[in-house]
Length: 72
Image (cartoon, rainbow, N blue to C red; front, side, top):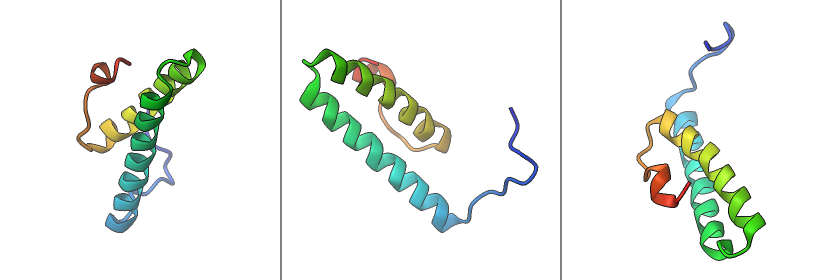
């Protein structure tokens, strides 16, 4: 799937903010998973959210652990 014709690559500062915000979300979700791993609804939904955010960070080229390292 290609980007819409009106899509423009963000400038470096915006790109850095996107990476930082995505990393912050990822870190928060990994902390939530650690706290709520014993609660089935928390564990299942947090894993699903982590999978999506992991894909964002992977596409951006940010180095994070592999999904299987988190049991996803």
